[in-house]
Length: 73
Image 1: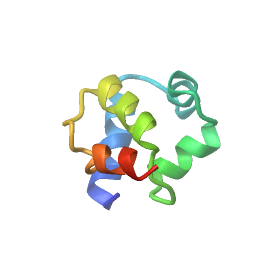
Image 2: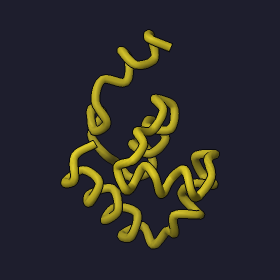
Image 3: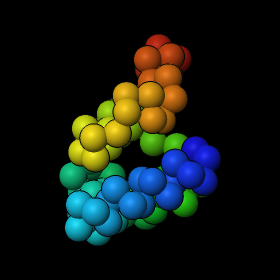
Image 4: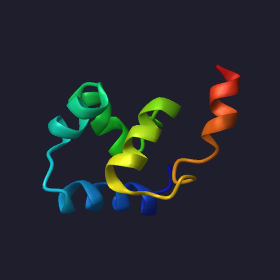
């Protein structure tokens, strides 16, 4: 995920007044795992990406082609 998208994800979380821990709990991963996503060290799974898209009202293609990633699994 590019730096601009990471920054937007952080901004959306802060606008929602949520901590990394709260977001992580809502999507069912650890805070450390979510921190890795925000800092660009890990991409979210397609399922986690869908949850984040819904939570923050992000565009459907925000994290790339989720359908292709699901089919590859």
